[in-house]
Amino acid sequence: GAGVSQSPSNKVTEKGKDVELRCDPISGHTALYWYRQSLGQGLEFLIYFQGNSAPDKSGLPSDRFSAERTGGSVSTLTIQRTQQEDSAVYLCASSVEGSGADTQYFGPGTRLTVL
Amino acid sequence: GENVEQHPSTLSVQEGDSAVIKCTYSDSASNYFPWYKQELGKGPQLIIDIRSNVGEKKDQRIAVTLNKTAKHFSLHITETQPEDSAVYFCAARSNSGYALNFGKGTSLLVTP
Image (tube, rainbow over all chains, first blue to last red; front, top):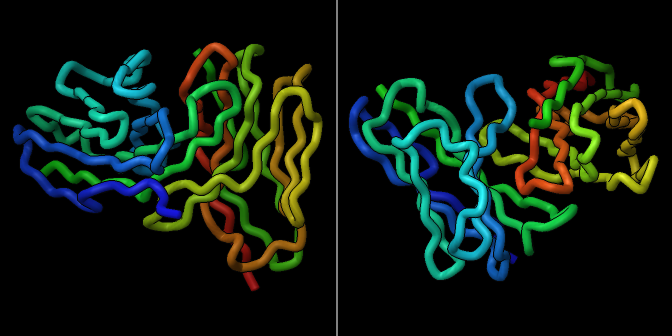
């Protein structure tokens, strides 16, 4: 079946502009996660959704970052007033229910470049 | 919070040899340890995982071992092939959390 999809695959923006990144999780998965991967670094957790609620937003680096999820499916990560240090690959993952040893399946990511 | 250390950062082996990647974690409440393989331009793909009630798990050429006392776990790849070349990430998840905490990755190169 279809995996996690993300769009756009690449995004180039100018410093100060807002960007929106989209994630379509695997159908039926109630849990959704956003991670950020900077060059040569591991994956850094940003936010976790269970349904439309976000019980864990502890990884969002600043108030310029926000995310929402609607209909228990699609999620959008918004970065306002982008900075050059926001350049990274933003990865989305989903899992069946988000508990215990639930396997997280990752999308291909969105590569964000802030000029 | 959880801190996951991964070594080595780069590993080069000849085809047919074994490769071992090691990780340590700090949170004794961690109970789930997946390993992901990431190829260039793609998202991470789960290759094997282990729960805290199991010491070892094997899937064909790939095996993972877990030592809860020492808080470390390892990935073993036997009979390596060029298509095993990729970046491998270990991760740990606490039983009280939702997020995976990742190591910084190991770039594995298998030369023919």
